[in-house]
Image (tube, protein in one colour):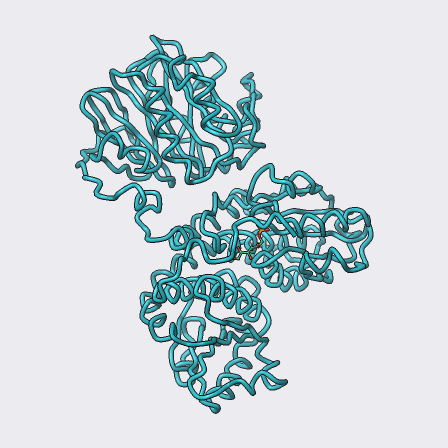
Length: 608
Ligand code: F6R
């Protein structure tokens, strides 16, 4: 996620802003910039790459005098990580400068409107519309212009704004993105993250969504969306820096698990406009899509398992055969691939060596490549013919969580999009599926609300030597990823089996007390897996079942049950993986493992 910092006081702003940006480095970023007002003139410095580069460019901030400023670390979403796309952005008349965290979902229509009104765009970012809107609405009243501009925005934003007509003031606005105000003595701050503030102050104000704050050296005034002042009470931050970086969570992995409703929403909702799926980055025409005879999905690890789950949705909806292949295998096979094959490449980092090699091999055979990637400007994103970014924000824990769920969400989106483009969906069914997709973030949130029992369950299963995960169809796909999560962070042996395969050998391993996690969430096939529960129970297994709320039968069969909300069976995996991530997390915690940095593993596997 991007980070923002703002300062207004009686000291030079730039060194304070640079220090604040360094505190935000841990979140990951690809470019950085600052804007400072000096006696009514705004100057900007921004670079792609490290904050050190920005420090060198500004001589530690000395070349940018001025007492009010805003700063930003960017994690690219719209537009490559270049100097031009880095924030802050400036209005055409040089009067306003803006930093922004979040995603503006309706930026394309706003951009068209602003360009029609003669505003010149320099960057490819969604953010730039904000600064031009403020300029358009400005009639001498800074706050009113910001309020009018934000009333036009759809999406999420934490904003910091400078206006050269009011040099001793900064404005901050919050909508569905974190923003916090810091109260100093004769100086005030805002930041997206408390870590940027604690070196200067521990007295903070929290903004609610829709609120705007005017900061001067002496005062902070907060307004609601109608412009009415809102009284606020200061709080004292007690977190140390490390706790603050993790947003108060004990581990990055838990923080990232909890971020999933927001991450999945960011991946999906900007691509659903006026009840239609818009995949502008996927420029294949319906005619070209009709020419696709086969889809091959390739990836490694969890990304491969996301492919295994996505296959069901694509095959069912698009009637195109989907072959999911491990990249490390595909690269050395002799794949039956030609120009009628669409290769879908999944990668959070965009730098996984095996995935890149498999992709190049398939490209050399004529396949067109659609990449689903998180890191903007990464190798895979650059090599692909089309790239859909995951917009999950940086993932710091080695074990992927929000990377997996956003990859999968985009595969679902692609499946519905392509099925409609191929004329395979009635309008009613298309709208129903879009509705199900839009409800996913909410359902993921409900999993958290429904499952306070997970830490207790973890303390029941953490001493197992081995755990089996069983399921069928989309439940089997979830079992694969659930077992991997358990293995990699808790070091417990965990094995996923297609439930129907048990009696072809594996059932010989089921003994008294053997833990089995049985996934019975796919309503089309859950009953069959419930029969498998009876089989393993008869051999003494201890069964933890996962089922959709309302399934009462499973209560009579399993030892423990975790309930989740139901969705279309094609999309169920993205919801059912959440308790499995949490189960692995709590088991690892119970066993004292190094959760964010499991042994022998690296975040990006850039070697074969
Ligand atoms: C598991 C995990 C790995 C990655 C795999 C691919 O939690 O994180 O299995 O999924 O190494 O990485 P990317 O998606 O970066 O290509």
